[in-house]
Length: 170
View 1 (tube, rainbow, N blue to C red):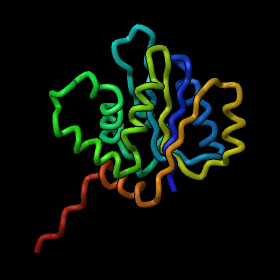
View 2 (cartoon, rainbow, N blue to C red):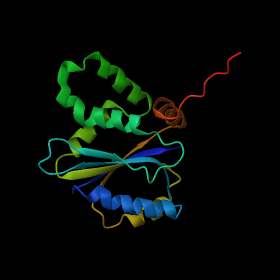
View 3 (cartoon, rainbow, N blue to C red):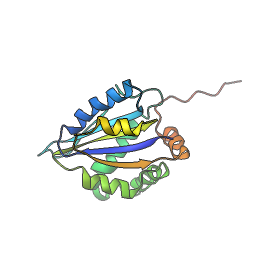
View 4 (cartoon, helix red, strand yellow):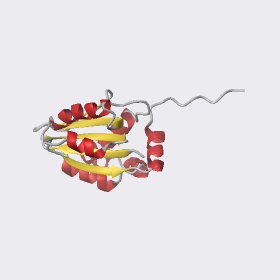
């Protein structure tokens, strides 16, 4: 079963530092990263910057569609107001189907503010005590959402960027 974790850092560069730690953990096979992205929100910026961590992800990565939708819901929807209308209801509903609900989105909006950063990771197989030890000394707040097998499959189905295999023609 995959776990979606969000690690919030009190500085704009904290997530980038944690990225290096995560790479080391993956090389040592202490965690398996399915997909990951960073949000950096520098002090004084109008909006955060986001970046998918392609160097960490392997086969089965969800891709930019997932991260784009998630970060759009968290950071940009409040700015768009009613212009989006009912379409946003459908988007938030599809995210809820994969274990990311309104409470999660609200909490991320509250937690990730100018001057902070966050590391979003979809992972499995973590050797928890070793991961915790590797991050010792790094200031962060860990927010964890466990995904069921069904939610993980749904997440991959909805957001995978793999091209569907065409049906054979007769």
